[in-house]
Length: 466
Image (cartoon, rainbow, N blue to C red; front, side, top):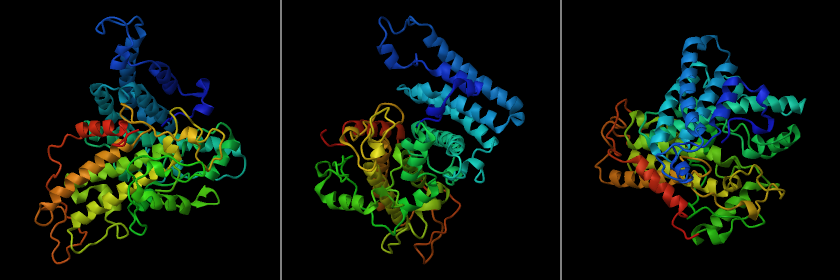
């Protein structure tokens, strides 16, 4: 989930904002319990290396200095300087974002408000922005590669802010500062083999192999789309055989044939061609964005947000996405759309070999056929105790639990919730939402506590002995 391109990084070519933040942040977090565990003696005493403590103070003060600097002279800054400032602010707070201590994470997540405000002022979310345009593989590949790196860096940074903003809303109950509408036109982050390419030729080859410049809006449409059958969800993350087919020992018998057919049907000439989100090899960063968007939409829908929330408005109630069962209320049908979307997301996560790479690996196969997963890299990525990274399945399980709760509550209602869809009249399946908010069906739920349980469940093998 990097936002700095490591293969081409050079300190002498990096803006001072970013260079200083990287040098300052490259230490352990002294407020992290894991750091205390590694120290001898009383954890209340100062560790032997005082820099471990000073660095945290420097990060905080430098963050405040950068925000004040932008407030004073932001209009005079170029986009490159403003963007470097945004990246530096994110880097300064990485120890907080990844801390195992909830209070430390909240400190970083609360600071995101400043980052989002600056991003809006510099026009980071503009739909006509240069960094949203694809790069054509023509002419001098070296020039095209460097141009693509600049654009992809802006995209990945924007997506990281979106991910953190969504996590903040779940973990801390903080009102999201970004909306799916802000980023629906953004291409999803490029898969790791493309981003981590070390030469222009390697980059060009990866660009031809993996889906790049795939807009979030299109993937979300495909995730909700009714026109494609929705296969059952597997019981757990599964591995592949050497020929690229799913290993049936890791899949419930009821879904073996469906999963195997889905894999073979998506292969054309050895390369994934199907545009369906469940069959694209796009990697964990893009799939994390997708499941967090689904989770955000489900929470807004369950909380009775105006018009069902943005995800519901934009994708869940499209004519191609909403199955209008006349025997069910509109809300039940919308919930069925979310259920189908979450199931498809899980299938895509399990099939996507890039979601099961070892930590720190940038190559999907380590010298094997790039279109056939190798056994050495197919260990399911365990759910760590960090806020996010590598494993998005806890958010899937949180969504699954919330859907079950919502289904039970809707079953106990006589008709739709007051205000959520307005006066439907004779056309029960009308999608003419009212402007009023509905009853909050998730009132009193502890999302953070539920997410902690989901992380433990995923870490323990998702109910299946490992």
